[in-house]
Image (cartoon, rainbow, N blue to C red; front, top):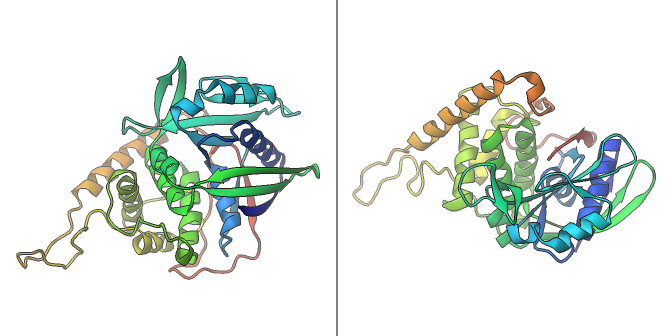
Length: 330
């Protein structure tokens, strides 16, 4: 069991940690993982880096299989803690302020479509790509001591995906919704992967894969292509060139494997990388970004824009303080 301490610095952080503690109690014994902002925050506590940015979230997201999410025992346990079912997968409880505590239950996508919605047992659940991989992989069991701004201390235990699975989830989330917070989280996770690579023996993204890992690699190298082409990327907390270098160092390029650029096949012919898939993905991302930009401002989810550090390359620059960025949502 890994032990971490979390200090809340805002009312939003208080709400998020209270919701996470409630989720931990209600889902105890279930096969679930803490995902979203809490996942990245806790991984930053387990693997501290010189670039740590505490991305605090005001709600709690759990990824679990559909049967567990619809289980009446989990529902009853949340209701006993004062929560009510608002929509098929979204629960709220009074927080003592105008903004309620919030818990979301998310399930694996089986359609291959990003951020799909599925019906089960009369309820609608948001389904996310990559979650099947996460649930099939051993979690990090974390004991959290959370100190709120009220001086109250919460003690609870939660299962969290390890760094590789977190990168897969966040890469696929970015491809699906182009949210700056996903880029922010990828910056943090890839810095962890670089600084703690010898402590991540299960890291497999550096070899070619199909399935969720392969899809995540395609998304990450689409991000690299955007950086190489000097397209704007919102949410960066490190220099864009450094993020691209981290991806190239720790993730296998799906367009050049199994033959690397300049390599020769069995016939002795030099192999050129096939980038048609990446170009198609970039075109789709550009179209999605254009559609997003045309939405009325009030219709968009509020996202903070993060600036980038001036450092470049793979070496980390010391950060004098861990910055806390309260943010609603995962």
